[in-house]
Amino acid sequence: MSPLPAPTARWTAALLPLGLCACGMLSPTPAPHGEARSSPPAPAELAQSDVNRMATLGMRDNLESLLRLADKLYKRNPAEWRKTSTASREDALAQVRSAMDRRQPWPALQGQRDIQALSLALSPDFKGDRVAAFILANADMLVAAHGDKTTFYLIDSLDAQHIYNAARNVEIAVWLLSSRRTAAGQPLLLADEVNERERNLSFEREFGKIVGRLDLLSAVLTEKYRRAAISYVQNLLGGSFLQFLPVR
Image 1: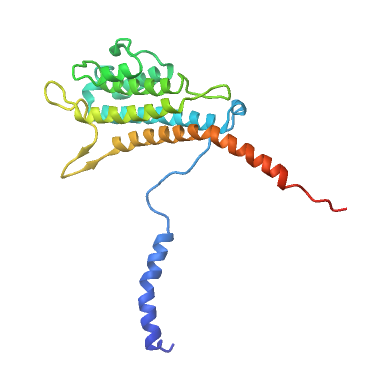
Image 2 (image 1 turned 120 degrees about the vertical axis):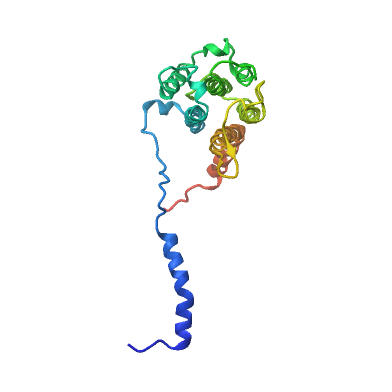
């Protein structure tokens, strides 16, 4: 086989790394990233609008995010789950999930609900399981902002301002959690950590997902009636100008 001409050889040598790079870009990444999945259809969805369904899925995901945060906080603050369960962290988390699902009052919150419960959970003098109190107070506040419901149908209405306020409440709660100290000068709870050895911002990311879902739902709700009016006008125009023409 005869050697390539000098110009061709030079171009081949120059393009070879680019080709290898492109092949690397096309190959699958080694880390699993999951996939988009939909829930199985249910008859009840016939009574839901697109916005109803979005609100229902958002509420489901936000409550699951709070439970993931509870597990993370329990791992970093084991003294807290021991105030709820003498068995294990998993048992304490199961009790939190049960209280969230049933919207049961958490005894250490002294009957307080919504933002009052959140204020109590973030008080430096709070003596109970602060992780459970903080997570359940956030959950109660979110459900309250959605009209005390977690599933939504055509007969339900949602207040965009209440959803927006809930997003801001989550941001405020996260800021207070990171900035307040106990009487002994310790953080209320150990959460995100940034130091010379590691950078753990998983708590911030999970709370950010909750805020993002709430803000998106609030924006969609404010658009709902405007889009309905636009769709009505579009249908009128379509009825006037997009008529079939006679062919015989």
